[in-house]
Image (cartoon, rainbow, N blue to C red; front, side, top):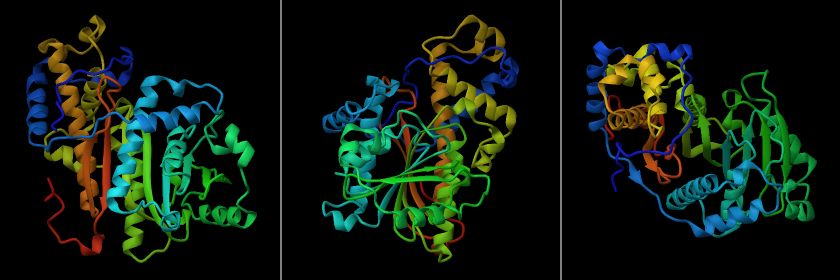
Amino acid sequence: MVVNLMSSGKPSSGLKSDDPKNCSFFSTQSSRNFAASIFRAAALLPPIRDDTESHPSAMTAIADIIGQHPPTWQEKTTNTAQLASLAMTVVKKVREKGLLVDDPKENAEMVFVDLGAGKALFSRLIYEMTQRNVEIIAVDREDALLNYDPKNSKLGLRNSMDVGSAQKQKVAENCEHCPATKATLKTEIFSYGNAAFTRILADVVDLNINALRNRGKAVVVAKHLCGHATDMALSRCISSSLKHAEGAKGLTVEIICIAPCCHQKMRWHNYSNQKFLESLGLGGKKMFTSLVNLIQLSRHQNLKKFEYRKWKGLKDFDFDTIKGLGRCSRRILEEGRLRLLREQGFHAELVSYADESITPDNLVIIAERVQSLQGKKSGDSHSEK
């Protein structure tokens, strides 16, 4: 099923008119050429695979988790629907790859690594959906209060068990291999199933995924990674793949499932595939800022007068066209990330995991490792479409 890039989305908060970065929006004189470049580039890209469907079992699981904890904003229906749909997309992909099976012993070397886990409701949902038979490592740079870790649930308090100081020490020692000494590396391990649920406090940019375990296969997930945090996460995954190709031991990233969001927070110097945008004639700080602003505007139901006054180029288009430009801009930016992954030996695609009426940030980057860099032939980095 082809996802319509021109479709309308759920409204979200607007950009402030006095934000300095908005001043770089394209001018009236060049607006039509700029818009034509966006539509032309997006039209040449493969369609987005649709994986939106209802998941009652996942919704039941998430309701059970929420019922064990004090209420938070994350129990909103729109949020739980996103989580349930994304978790099902992830679990299906892992089963298709053959990494997740019904026998708990066969899953012993598999680990889900949740980047930017926050309160870890997504991590916990995957933990429950895999019958607590697959280890979870929830990574975030902040110690979230009122989180959904098993130790904080009514069920976890009753049945939790310490997996042992020796294993805690092993994880702590592994984490010391993270490249930056400034990283905060606090580790908690607890379990009330067959597999551990580990929380690590560290910034994504400081994380060495290989060093989290002595061996095993990692499925890296995230919902949502704001702005350029997605690019940092992809960099960490690629670094892990490169180290594996060079013979390094530790976790190997086998699957990546990352749902980006908050594109308006992105900056040109942090984007992971500048060469791709430059090849389309859309490179540089000014055009990049215009692209991410269009993405933000496309989430609105309409435009306010101050937005038309601030960005003169907008008056050349009706709002439906602006929404279409925003959706196409999003598609182009994600394509650059996909192509970067393909260059590093991953099969990568963009998938719509939830209906746009639930969230405008309804796309997930899914990649699976298919070969090492040593096995790639020169000149085939963009052969996959």
